[in-house]
Length: 363
Image 1 (cartoon, rainbow, N blue to C red):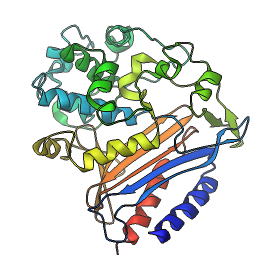
Image 2 (cartoon, rainbow, N blue to C red):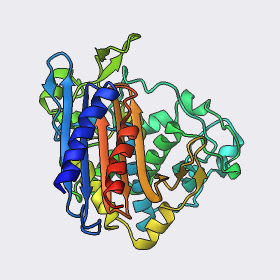
Image 3 (cartoon, rainbow, N blue to C red):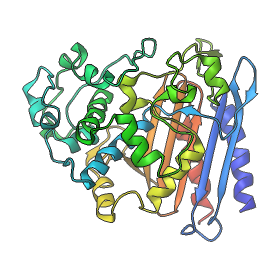
């Protein structure tokens, strides 16, 4: 196992330099069902800086914005409601949200499962409006009633089962959770997942990091353990981003803040299949839609791909200043989480590189 750790140490330093990242944090774990050489592996490391202005080092316990990794959690929120008998995968979206108007009659045929696997035919938005965040309990519903949603239209009929990634549709899934649970989206996710799994550094309501303060002052967030956002200029030099991405309108699609340690807990729970029933996992980890260009498939909120014959299940995320990647491999009993604090960082490539190391030590 020491050899695996040495390989991971060397690879992480090389990858950070190769992909020109300010900071990157990683957690890698292999459970008792892993190979003899890997079983019991627990690895966590931060490399680089959390803030280019001060060069403070990234630590694995630092808090990152997880962007669209949030969608995997939101899909699990719907799945939990299904197990609770409060919603059905085949239920019509408009039956759950009868006030929804999209300006296209085809929306009436959209079923919940089709939204979860991005095969609803619904379009997307272009601006998360991090510069104008909303914080109220009514933010999700107000967004669903907004002109942006009304005018979004449909790209095609859901029966065509064509993949089109839609953050907008995932905001509506979050609203479905609110409508059927009787709780705010954030409270439901906290009650059903974050607290039970001991994800104590995690929230879908970023002001929690500041005891509810909606100012989201960057220095205060930094003191609370959050790494800062970065981008690159036209010369590919790092630049500091004067914003921390958050908007309650987009919490279901984008606003999980957490650590690689907490995502490790999430991954381990699903590897043990302790969050849902066995038959539920069979449903959500079934291929439902083909993702164009990369050979991946979409389950009910989870992407699925193969790497050297191993099935890898998880999600990616990207927003201004951050990239995140979380993938589990049931065959290896492994989870790999990679996050960085710069727009467009190559975290998926790093995750694949880590899985290469794990797979090669099995051969």
